[in-house]
Image (cartoon, rainbow, N blue to C red):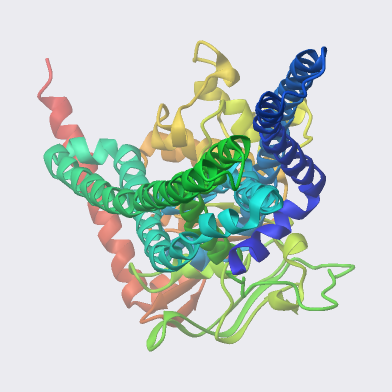
Length: 590
């Protein structure tokens, strides 16, 4: 079975715990078979009048031992199965997260975070429940009835054969109903992923929801997702509860047959009452593990659906990996070159066409152009978040596809427009740039990025908690922490993507001070709209129509005229208008 073959990768290392759990379960079940046999012996002694003086005492001692063993086995069975399950859960979660970390950038842009969380946590927890209960119960559902049938055949095989008559009905029915149950729970897990994704997205974007007054619409969306989940789980539950009821009915039919035929045999003296007693008791026991298995079939089908979803994610292969024999250059020059680069996200929709430019070691190159021409894409191609379809991106003269990914990314610092901060402290987020950095190095990076300008005013200073994604900080404060993180990393190549695009003039000045310190003696590529950032560049590359249309210094490009000159003049006009407006407002004061 594919389901168990997949799980064996994680259950295999826990085979001793799983085996111990199954053994303890078998002992627990077997000890339950002893009391009816002991009572049978008492009935035989009574019928034959052959009981010894201390016979009942021996029976009582045997019963006490049986129940003591049963109690110990029950404890060991539960403890070992859960230890194994939690170990499997841990191993599966770690393996899943490790695999997710290897997946390319494109994978995350095509999927919702909540759906990945659902697979990484919810589906793995479902598998844990199966390992804790499903595996031992499944073994018991086979082993216990087999042991009971052997005992019944030894006592009186014709009656045992009669007891078996309803069994094939269970097998035939199971082959029909269990695929339906599994498919139903597959739909439930998908619906749960949709709920998780929608709720996660709504909570993360609460400020936008409130700002646009869309609470009612979002509530309807979440309600619809939950309604779909409710309908799917009710449908799955409908199918899941059928087997237990059917098995109860079949067990009743088997018991009626045995009582009817066995009672007649007893009255005619063919078998003793003691044997009929054991048959009746054992028939109650023989179907119990099967009924229990039917009752937990919901968990088993959930686990099968969840395992499919987990391994569907684990089997996603990254198209970005180190080439065999990839080695880092021994004496890198830290130049960056785009050599006739072609790139697209979707076929027949080019984002970059024959883009070529070069940044020498220590140079600051600015990339400018209208929205949507591929500027941010250039930033993502340098650390090889994506592979180009044509041409090459080179670092120190080597194609980035020929360099070890770990080495490549260790030597590139990114300061992106969309800053991501973790829900910790200011100190923790800066230290993320270089694990193992000393306290003095962290504080030096913070000062260089002008983080101390606001951190020292907070009650807890650098230990102040900033909330999820830094929600308690302004955009400029978040950006400065991001710059401090890059300063601490101390990489030789720096990529800045719209680092001052959405901050006020005063904050922009503080960020520019930090960037001046950060870009010193580093090869830097800056993507920016604001010309105050661009003017600092050694050279400027203009992207239009998804290709390079001009390159040169600020003065050279301005003198040529065209798009660059036009955008500079517009920004200067906007700046002049803002200054005049502020002066006008100031003259209206007292």
